Amino acid sequence: MCTPMTRYLFLFIFVSLETVCLAAKITNFFVPQQHIINDNNDEPNDVILDCEFELDPNEIGFVLKWYFNDIPIYQWIPNSNSGHPSPLGNLEIRNAINPNYTVSDDPIQKYRALAIEKPSSKFSGNYTCELQSYSSDDDRKTGFLQMIVPESALQLKIETSDDDQYGVECIVKNIYPKPKLSVIPNVSNFQTLGKWDNNTNLYSVTVIGKIDPALTNRSDIECLLEIANTTYEKSTKNLATDNHRTRLALLLSSICFLFYLNIF
Image 1 (cartoon, rainbow, N blue to C red):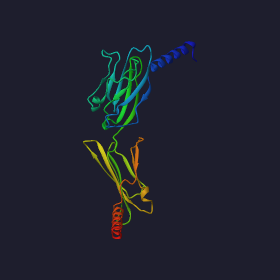
Image 2: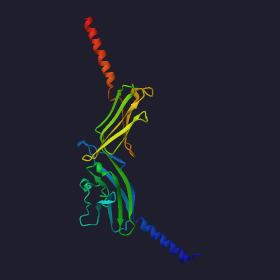
Image 3: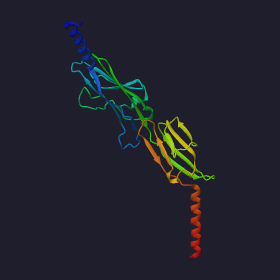
Image 4: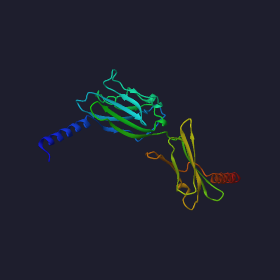
């Protein structure tokens, strides 16, 4: 049976723990699901990751850190001599971080965001914001960011083979990450070939096979490009011409032209 003194003691402990837990807390954490790298210098291409937080008015200080795949890359200590954030470590991403970026005029929130001004395909991964205060437990939030380098080409080639099948070839060049490439309608006899360029970190993939004309019209054949766990998706139809039919069309045109000359 609890005495009044015991109840007051429990209440004091609960309130104290509640105060400690709420002294510093991340309230709004944002890491974009994906970022499409744009090589057009006329348009901004920065990636902004945000880590909004609440701090108890009695809190005497805090440290905010960002991690890339669990390796520290950014640190801000407002009460330090400079009061200015600094990139950390020796990873390549260090040189891509803008330490002068500010997300708020509030001096307590000013440098909480991580600004990557030179995105690279190598910067895909887990980003973690960690808030450390002197009088409370640390708070951490993590999100995954997928960098995307758009393809340099997406092509669909269709030819009529000697066995009267549609010979189909779907090609994507110079993309990151490795995409899923498929042909619609989906048939089981398609093969996927791919290569990765170590110098550029880009992928090129080809899907090749045959489709029975009885299954679909030539104009309905489609090449579909997708990147897993993102909204990035593209498709194309009839970008190439059937070589057999092209030759036939040229032959018919020549015959008509000769017939025209004979008449006139």
